[in-house]
Amino acid sequence: MPEGDTVSQAAARLHEALAGRRLVRADLRVPRLATADLRGRTVREVVARGKHLLARLDGGLTLHSHLRMDGSWRVFPAGRRWSGGPAHQIRAVLDTGGLVAVGYRLQVLDLLRTAEEHRVVGHLGPDLLGPDWDAAEALRRLAADPARPLGAVLLDQRNLAGLGNVYMAELCFLAGVTPWLPVGELADPGRLVGEARRLLLANRDRPDRTTTTATHPRERGVRGRAAPRLYVYGRAGRSCLRCGTPVRMAATAHGEPGRERPAYWCPHCQRGPVPPG
Image 1 (cartoon, helix red, strand yellow):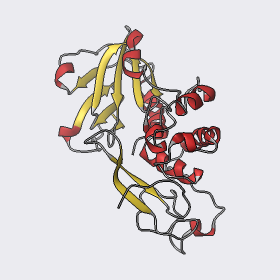
Image 2: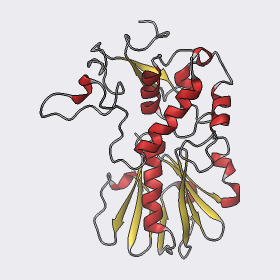
Image 3: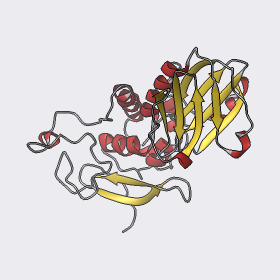
Image 4: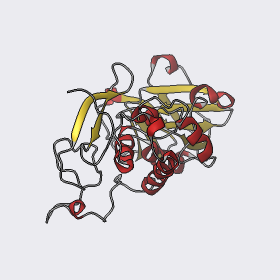
C-alpha cells in the first residue's frame, strides 16, 4: 500500500530515470489531459510531498499524481516489454528515448503550473520525510481536536503528510492504544510524532516495510519462516507478536464514505475504546 516511504522511493526512481532528460513522448491517458503535448520538455526533478508525486518540467509545468491504494510508477529501458498491469490500466507514459516511465492505476493525474502546486498539496500538514519537517507544527495539528479518534487524526493528511493505514495501525500498537482513543487522551503525543518520523525514515530505503524489532521472542517466527515485519496490520486472527492474543480487525473503521479502511489492534496490548460488536 503506497504511503510516504514508498512514494518517496517512487519519486527517487523517477527522478533518477527522468531528471535532466527531454521527453520524446508523453502520453497522458485521462480525458482532460489527452491533448496535452509535453514532447520536447525537459524534466527538471521529481519530488514527493506526503503521498503526492510532483514531476516538474521546464516551462513551469508540473505533472501531479497520487497513487491512492494500488497505483504505481514503473521504469523500463526502451524496447523492454512493460509489466505492471494490463494496458487499459496505464494512465501515463513518459518516454525519454532511453528510459520509459509508465504510470499504472493513477487515480489522480493533473497538469498544472509549478507556481500553483499549492492547489494540490497546499492543504498538507508537515511532511514526515520532507526537508522542511516541523515537529512542533505537527504536534500542534495533532492536538487541535482532542475529541477526534487517534486513527482518524493520523490518517488526515492535514495533520501529518505521509501516513496511511499501515502506519496508523502500527503506530497505535506501538503507543499501546486503540485507533478509537480520543487523541486528547494520548499520554505522550510528542513521542508518537517522533515514532512516526522514525519509522518512515527507517523504511524510506527498504524494499519491505518493517515496524517490528528483534526484542520480542514471538517476532522471530518459526524455523524456516521469516519473522513478521508488521505488528498488527493484516494479522487479523493471528497471534499478537507480544502477548499471543489474537489480533482483531474492524473492516470499515476509518476513512471517507465508500473508501473506508480496516483497523487492526490487539485487545490485550492496546487500551481504549473499540467499536461495538
